[in-house]
Image 1: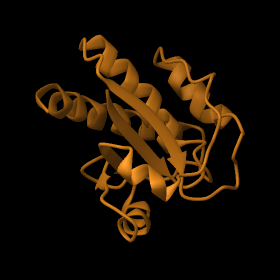
Image 2: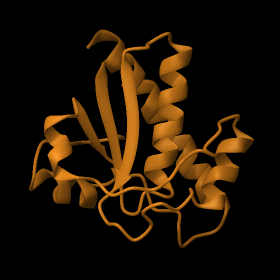
Image 3: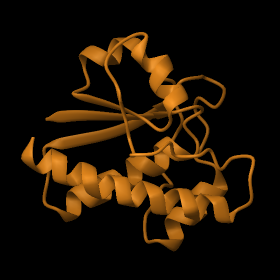
Length: 141
């Protein structure tokens, strides 16, 4: 089983959205040998549910993020994960000091936390597009 970890700041918005979307798209593509999890660079929200606005954006697009609970990235996971994906260049820099990571999307996925509700829908659209690309890469890899 291949292991993919998606990382953002607090693990309540971007990375759990990425986890839910990538997991669903992999299942739709019939790729069943990849496990997707997510975490945050910080521990502020450990144990918390996904931000309600993120969960609502997912529901509007047919995804279910209700089981998510935030957790903090553990550097020991670099040896356990096949792929560590950062939601923006700040996360990438923080992670790369400890191990190998890549960006989830071609451009930084902006943090919708301090913005309006529609920002979550915009972020979700960017995540869906990037997830499609990862499905293609994971199908061949």
